Length: 159
Length: 422
Image (cartoon, helix red, strand yellow):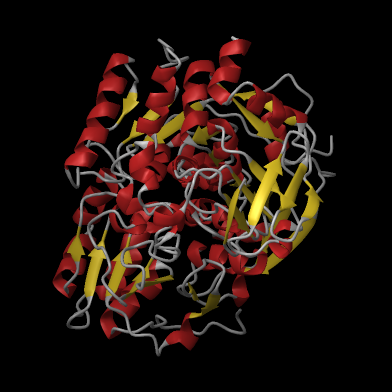
């Protein structure tokens, strides 16, 4: 269980982790600046298990994998958005940061609401309002990568 | 049958059935990484104890983002990349002195061509679609996996046809075409889809224009943006003595949407902060005062871009107090611009010229913006804080508008009559 951080549409990878911090690539160093250009306090208040909920096209822009790495290293357990930019989506799966496309989450959760998610079983609960919602299952192809623990593990098996 | 150009190229690189929505694995012709994304790929490669790359001739590594090394941390990342390249004898590695911005450099060196299947750990890898290749940006772990297997997984995209008709007027260039298209589609209008350019208007666009257009399809969310191969494409590739396959869309190829742009009606366009889709006619923005102009990047740092800028600046002086920073995209372009006198015109006008680097485009170095500063740039993104301070603002334009604006200090349309427009 965690609390919700809520952001709008078109959250780009430049605000998730500004390029001025890309002279390093160690996850905790990146997490120290995660989201700071749109939410300066995020890095100070985020706790393990928290969830980001956003609108359309989350993660647009640069292909920097540092963006999902920074989010994951911040302790965020998953990102739920109306839609994701395609490179961010691939990167998140490849490094094992679960991302969920949901039409309703953005409207049904407020900032700081308590949330519980079980993507395996396919539900999420707003503990603040005590309402439960369905989570769409991942495509089988993507689920395979997740089950193997990321892309590098999945190609090891195939070779 | 019923396949788009993108789907045809995918089908030629896999044994699996290719149809929109299918997940397939494709063989790759070229992989690309830079000094920001490759270190993360190297970690993934080494963490999984992989010893060898699949083909040292099919990997290009170009340290271009924070080079020449902007600080010690950047230098360490470049050293890590250099050691990896040496250990694996990767053939296409370009140290400063022979480098350029990756998306301008690879076509120039003849390392990418029509019909190729290309991935790069940089979102603007879509640039090579201008040559009639399938080319798309991926992340570092994808790059690491591909360095091991020579393959990458894709979801076969649905396609949007972008028909270009008519001939552009005056200073209208590829940048205006792509900004117009992003304005129509929005920043996610082509998400997960391919943009397939068609129409007789293409014949009026130079290869440089086409590279600029394909470069920015990612700003509409597209997976790739591909041009058919015509005489100009062939001439470009023939100059590098390349053998290349040519794929064409089937006549009954399925497009889920068709957008037509009449190039003859376009005027110079500017994208206002903070999204590339936030477009306006440059002529309507002459109240916007600017502190800095940047001409260059993988989008607009090619020779014709520098020529247009130099022609507009030649014999004139930029607005006092304004900072004009010009970045040739490759060493070759730099040298040719110098021999042609473009560099001299720019410097005489009061601009500075830098060695090739991604530098200011992503807020790395060489022209970072301060509090509330406004920059007009020929780069590709104007997100919050992209080029510096979180309160700074970026306007995106063609080199012609950027050069004309550097003379006045406000957003300025270079001369000409543009008809109805936007």
